[in-house]
Image 1: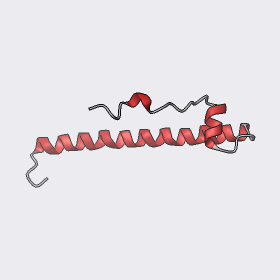
Image 2: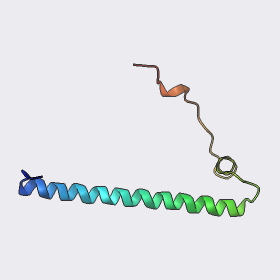
Image 3: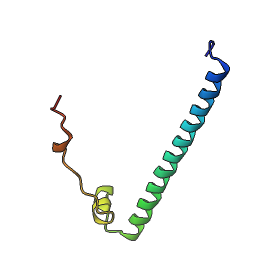
Image 4: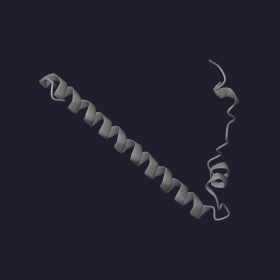
Length: 73
């Protein structure tokens, strides 16, 4: 930063603010996810594990890795 111009400093500040907003948004999403799952655990006491809760309540299905093309260049 020792060679930063006023324009560089302004751009850096804008990028920093944008990044901070994205981090806060991501944290809010994680907290909402946890709250939703906590509520679902309470409402579905027969579910003892997250994987069971995800499948039963949220209809999550684990996909296969076959379509990710790991072996292709």
